[in-house]
Image 1 (cartoon, rainbow, N blue to C red):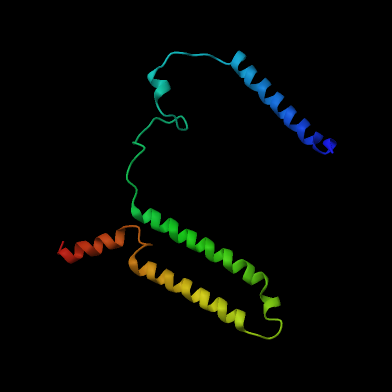
Image 2 (image 1 turned 45 degrees about the vertical axis):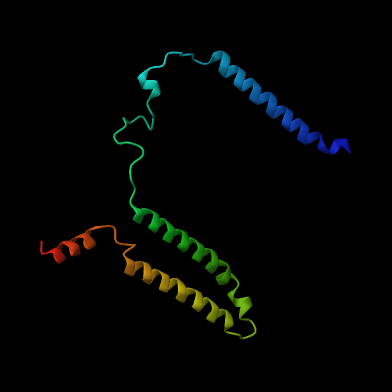
Length: 137
């Protein structure tokens, strides 16, 4: 009974020894700098100097488009298994699966039309110019 777990215990032992050796080697051979400089305290990203602050405002439209993308992913997740199993579902001549997926696609199209009408997919230009025309500019 104890022999069943031996390969797992050996693997865990080897992993533990290996990680201890690597951490010890890094501590012994690694470069040590104890001075706190301004260059050390700055954030580092790809070697480029920091241009803008990290916590800036992001437009709500970005999040709305991200949510629409998630809806699209869920739609594909539901459509793929349906498309794979369509022949087996209509094998007896019933068109019920076709009507069900048509209703599902109809709801998705209505959702996209609603979002389009609300301006979710407009990223700027046209909407701002139509507001300026309304003011007489």
